[in-house]
Length: 155
Image 1 (cartoon, helix red, strand yellow):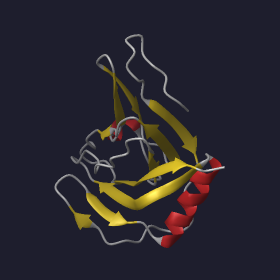
Image 2 (cartoon, helix red, strand yellow; image 1 turned 135 degrees about the vertical axis):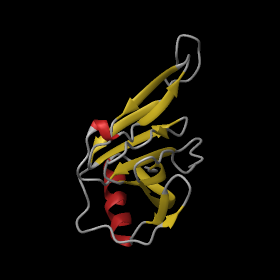
Image 3 (tube, rainbow, N blue to C red; image 1 turned 180 degrees about the horizontal axis):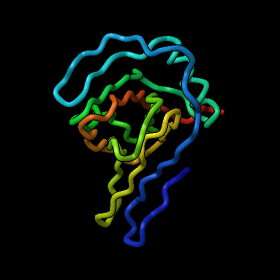
């Protein structure tokens, strides 16, 4: 999980994806609308679900978990300040198509970008930098993502 380096000696971004499935039940929350997206706090059931998923990867949640809802034409993610920690995004949207947009993008030196498409029940874990989320296409369904930070479990 550690710091690979590019040929120029700069640290490479450390990203991995894990299929964890979708939590049982429906997402019920109150959303605070913002310019680019809407946010809400995760329910206790959702916190329990992500705690188990992270533990399976040798990680534990740290800090607040945030639900983010993007609609068509919206993009971006709230900052996580995940320096030295793992950041994670769990896609909770059941029906997704790549053409809907909402790709997670990671900038790599020297000037390359790596991206992942949304996939229901897929948890993307990263270190080094927070990703950007591309705009959702007009007419696409809302995308719901659980965001948070994690740290390695102490053994």
